[in-house]
Image 1 (tube, helix red, strand yellow):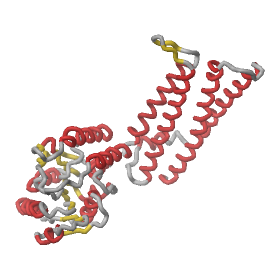
Image 2 (image 1 turned 90 degrees about the horizontal axis):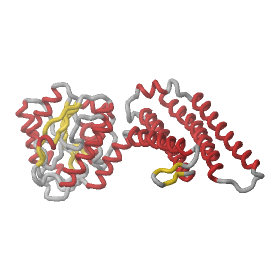
Image 3 (image 1 turned 120 degrees about the vertical axis):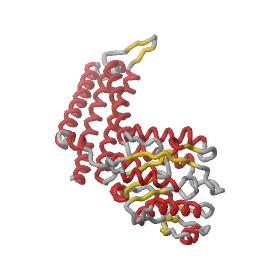
Image 4 (image 1 turned 180 degrees about the vertical axis):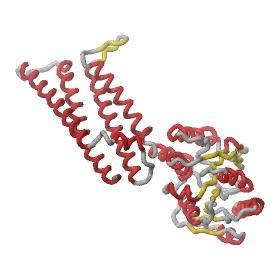
Length: 374
């Protein structure tokens, strides 16, 4: 149980958990991961037979990581110490773990949210949207990413090397469980109004953003790759459509001005795809993400040498177009030029030269990242 000034509810939570352990006939302990309480929570916990683990670093995730590290059991069940979760329900989580699941997630939307237990903004917007994004990004079966009551095999979660310190810890556990191939099940869980008598530690917009930021950062595909590919194709389509000349659709004429936006989309899209590759390789190298066999197969063919050749060809092509444009200008005795004609030479040359340079530089950087992986 993570704890920060929970003296009003801590005792009833500990008593329920101890009663459940006794009723189930299992060996267990109650750990209170104290995050610097000043209301006597430590003495209450110790007096009831719980083991108090002081955690100096502040934050929900820090407290849980400290408590999990100190746990001596094969299974760990974590839950908030505000009496919003029913610790007599521990047998349902234990049953899932005994079936072979690595993580048993509580689901408040299946079990029921009692009136006043969750703010409407969290219940109908925040939790459903963030959980939906988690399922979309990581193909997770979990319908409630942020449920504070969950059980897991300690050795399985230890392998994930969880690192976040705040409320986003709850998302990190689910996301990494999916990425590293752990077996995940859900347990319907009832959420009751907490008994604190004070505002919760959760901050709606700050912690909601931290959850969303974490989901995006752990999914380079959705943050960088898919938007980048979309921009690349859109920019290429617009550019090819306008290169022969102006186009009129519904009385609106698209000309070299729009061609400039197409070129910009190509360059931004390529850069976004680059960031997807950089982020993925860096995260794998640092152990934040598991190895990706598809990426390994891809890099058998996309090597530093291939990148340098492709980049050099694009640079030469772009430079050739610029030389052609210079010749066109010379044929006009270096006088005034028609932008409609000249920009259709200069813009493709600019895009080609820029892409070639980016590919050369990116190839060197990817090779550098790959050295760490090897």
